[in-house]
Image 1 (cartoon, one colour):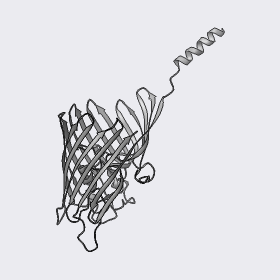
Image 2 (cartoon, helix red, strand yellow):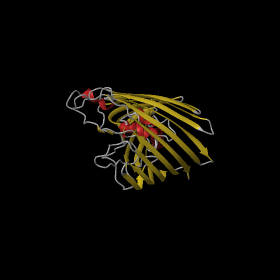
Image 3 (cartoon, one colour):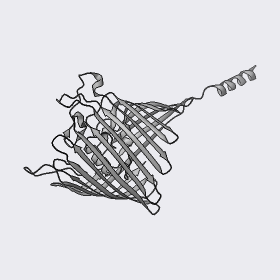
Image 4 (cartoon, helix red, strand yellow):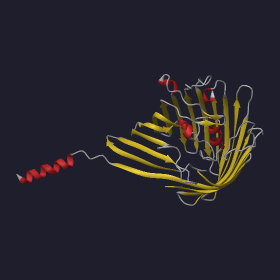
Length: 361
C-alpha cells in the first residue's frame, strides 16, 4: 500500500501543469560625446548626450503562460548622461504591459507609434540624422523622437514572413514643442474622443531590400481658436544594401500641423552607408523640409557626415558633423539658438561637430 501511494504521488507530480516561467532583463544605452558647435549667437563647447542613441535604462520581461501565450512588459526611462539628470518624470520613454503569441503582441500604456520605426535613413534614426532633426522640428509625429511616443494607448505588433505590421490607438495625444513654439495644451473638458490619435505602419524586409509606409492622425481639441483640424501624416521609405554601399531614402508629408488649417510640410531625405574594413562605416545623409503656410513657404536643409567604428558588439566610437541651414524665422538644429536683441529671428546655420562613444548593455 505504501509503495502504491508513493507511485501515485510521483505520477501526480509528473502530470501536474508546469509553473509559468518568467524572466526580467535589464538593458540600456550610455551615449556621450564631446562637441563643438554654433547656432546664431550661441557657441557650444562641452559634453552632450545621445548623438547616436538616446541614453536610457530599462526593464523588459516575459512570462510563459502556456499554450503559446506570454505576458510582456517594458519600463524604460531616458536620461542625459552629460549631467546625469533623468528626462521627464516616471518611465518617460516606455511603460507598457501586454500579451503576446503567434498572433503578435497587444500592449497597453505609453509606447511607440508606428512613426517611431520609420527609419529609412543612413543614420537609423540617430539624433544627428537630418530626418530626425527636420521631422521633430517640423512638429511631425513620424519621427524617431518623443512625439512618436503615445500615452494612454493600445498597440499591436506582428511579424509574418518578412512583413511587420504595427497599429496604435491613443485616447489622448501628448504635449510637444516645435519650431513655432509650444504646442497648445490639450483641452480635456470636451468630448473624450476629440483628442485621440491613431496610426498604422507596414514594413517589409527581403534580403537586402526594405520598404515601408506609415499613416498617422492626431485629433486636436485645443482651447485655442483655429487649432481644431486633424493633423494627418504619411510616409514612404526604402533601402537597399548592395554590399559595397547601401542606399536609403524616404518621403513624408503632414497636413494641418498642430491642428492649424493649411499649415503643411513635406520632408524628403536620401543617404548612403559605405563599409570601411570589417568594423567601420561612413554615413552620408541629406534632407530638406519645406513648409506651406499662408503668406510664406520657408524651408530648412540639413546634412550629416559621420563615421562609426565598432570596437566590440556593444561599443561603438563615432565622429560626426551636422549642418542645418534655416530660412528666416526657423531655428532647427542640434545646438540651441541664440540671437541679439533687435536682430532678425532665426535664419542661421546650426553646426555641430561631435566625437563620442556609445555602449549598449
